[in-house]
Length: 345
Ligand SMILES: [Zn+2]
Ligand SMILES: [Zn+2]
Image (tube, rainbow, N blue to C red; front, top):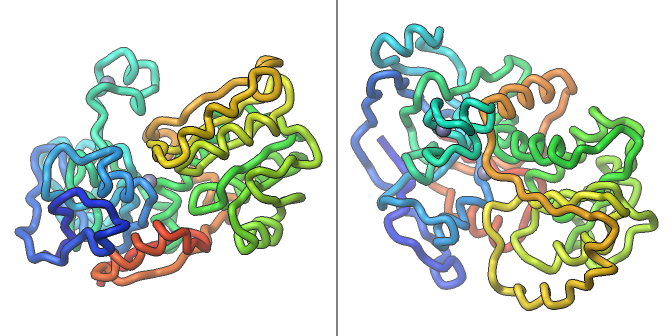
């Protein structure tokens, strides 16, 4: 099969084409796994973190991609039969490839925090390819309302956005801020308008186009990351890869407010900005900071259902599988309008 392979970790500043198109053997599903023919795969900022070594894959070469929509092409063994998955089913594979299922975290419904958590397209091969395998228990049915390209970005950006929004503890009518306005937060804005129709949404973004995009989707206010919003906010979700927005967001939080950081890693480039942290302005009055780590199957499945019901569709741009490097480069340069999706013929 054809696959876009990551063979070494590089800095994308000097290596604009980190992936190579290669012919590799078709994967074979093991016990409890299914073989999936990939139809679409979303491109995520986390892939840049993998390529540049901030969350490095444990083995190379590896096939990236954790927002995979495909069709079950083959099932392997008795366990897949028990899971009710059949050949021809349209399914999605998200960032959660598997978790142990027996540890205290897994038992408590926090499989996203399992120490044995395996991430799709990092710890095991993902969807930048014609085929992949995945455990039957961890793949997710795709509601019929969603097209292949619509569903792909929902599997990561959407599902983690959903988890982020839940972790804010927001109540309808409270004010929500979104810092950064790429693949995840534009979905969170749509989701928040559906789940919290009386909440005003404020967007902080680095460029005018994203600010306009946010207003067009219903934000009551959009400004730059260093601006003060016209009101203090009860919760803010930060999806940026850097530190300045964290400090600035804390300044925009109301007392008792919570900042939720939805970023797998932060870059070191502007870490010095943290020295501007001022206790009375940024943390006093019981302000909280919480990160979001991974997703559970429940997050993915609930969110896909909500998205289908709410008519929530991501804005997206399509690229051919072999143009993955271009999609990644544009993501790195911040050329973002919605989500980027690879289409596999
Ligand atoms: Zn992702
Ligand atoms: Zn576990």
